[in-house]
Every structure is written in structure tokens, then in C-alpha cells.
Length: 245
Image 1 (cartoon, one colour):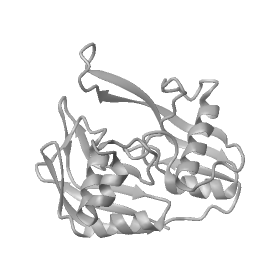
Image 2 (tube, rainbow, N blue to C red; image 1 turned 90 degrees about the vertical axis):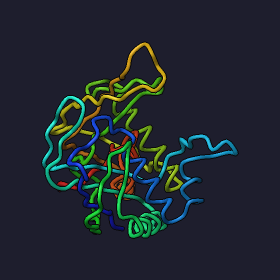
Image 3 (cartoon, rainbow, N blue to C red; image 1 turned 45 degrees about the horizontal axis):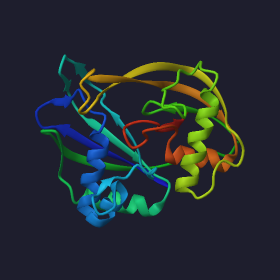
């Protein structure tokens, strides 16, 4: 299987500071261009078209090589790279065909012109252990919804829980054996997200981690998670990994 990189440029040289749902918006626009009914089924359900929170076969990572932070906006000099990975070929086909029909992507008034599309052949993991590096930060939480630090005694258990759930939802079968996780150069990143309609405070904060880590488990599970992504919010610019060695 392959993954897709979309090279874009900001039409005004800026990027939104509040961008947690930008990846989801881009994916919706791309899938709508290919098949509106398919896009609706992925993201909505029922006659009222409520948000579908089912785990999706879509993992995203945004990379901006030249970025300057200001108070309300991010200033961009050069390319914005939107990376997408997936497990099933049918999703690749829908996304790739949709991208070919889209010249621009828009989010909250920010417009981005598509310059180029690249397809990258993924590596194959041939052992029961691999060193991953993050392309977008990994988010893990417990069943109460608390976002965990990597030092938390329940971190590995909760990582296994969401990995098993992701595999069950997309592949149809969960983990073949538990994952063993060892952080190598794994640094905390606190993500800020605006709370809609909540007046007590404007933002809440999410503990996430970026860097390198060792993951041991069943070889087929590792290959599947490499494609699907690891952790929560995988469609929202989180959980994408690449193989270091």
C-alpha cells in the first residue's frame, strides 16, 4: 500500500492557529469531490446527519517546513505538506481520485492551492519490533477521557486498548498479541483546542507526544498500525508514524 502527500501553498501566506479540525475538513472536501454519498456515510449517520464518531480508515499529518508563530495566526513561507495514510485500497482510490478533482482546499476562510501530489510506497515491517518516528503527535487517553502522560502507569494499557479497537474497526480483528512500548526520544507536546459553546473556559489542553519509540508486537499488527496510525484523533492530524529502522 502507499500513502499520499499533497503539497499546497497558502494563498495569503498564513495558516490558522486553531487548526485541530483542518485535516477533517480537507478530507471531507476531497471525498465530496469524488463521491458525496460516500463522504456522508464516513462522517455522518442517521436522518439528522449527526457526526459519525466511528473509527475511520484515515490517518493524517500536516508538515510545514517554514513556519513562524504569531499570536493569532501562523505565517508560512513555502510548502504545506498534507500527508494521508490508510489501510484499505478502496479508501486510497476514493481519496486519490478526489484529490485529482480539487484545485484548492479551504478552511475557515483560509485558502490553500494544491501544487503537487506524490504517492509514497510504504515499507514492510519484517520483524516483531520496530522503531517508529512520529509524523503527527500520538494521543492516548483512559476510559474516563483523561489524556495521559507517557509516565502514567496506565499508558501502555490504554495504548493497547485503542490499538486493539482501531484494528477491530478497520481490519476486522484486534491485536494478535499485546504491544510492548518503549519511548526513546519521546517528548511531550501540549495541544490547545477551542471548546465550542462552553463558557467556563475557552480552551482545553491535550497531552500528546512526538519523537521516536520502539514498538514490539505481532508483525502483521505492526504493519497494520503503521498504515492506520496509532492512538486517538488519527483523522485530526495525530498518530501518523514512519519507520526509522
